[in-house]
Image (cartoon, rainbow, N blue to C red; front, side, top):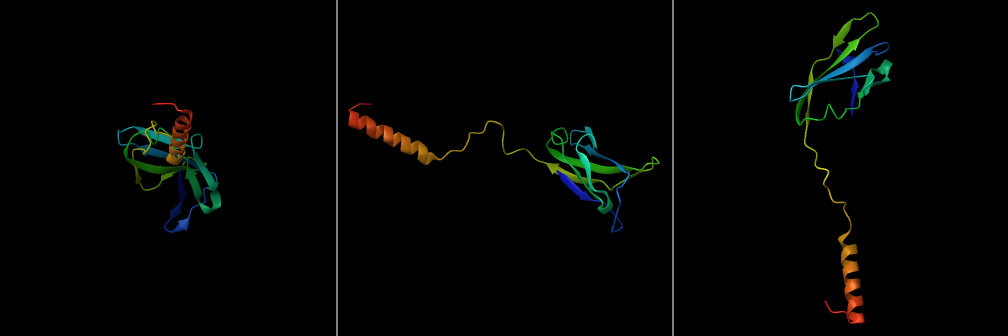
Amino acid sequence: MLEFTICNQGQVVDLTDQTISISFLKSDGTLVIQDFSSGVSILDATTGNMQCILTSQTLAVVGIVNAEIAFTDATGKRLSTAQFKFNVTESLGSGDEIVSISEIYILDNFFRNFRYRQIMGVNY
């Protein structure tokens, strides 16, 4: 998730009646556009606060993503921010992870079974 406070020359911009979209140019050259229907929302229009919950498509390719926020008012006038960048890195998890458990539990069970077999006279 990205959260923004939109300012113009140090002054907060009122986002009331603005339609907002964010264009993301991924490192593979694919353009993804997110808007109100796909993760963009205004948190507080009068204080210029907005957010974007990034979709899996936006984050699908490892590398630098160039982005720009566009605002369209009720008259159709369109303005945009300066471009900004962020880096998508490969996930630490691959989907083949093993659930972490305490090895003490495993060893405890092993020794308990071993001791039981000794008492019962079971040979390995």
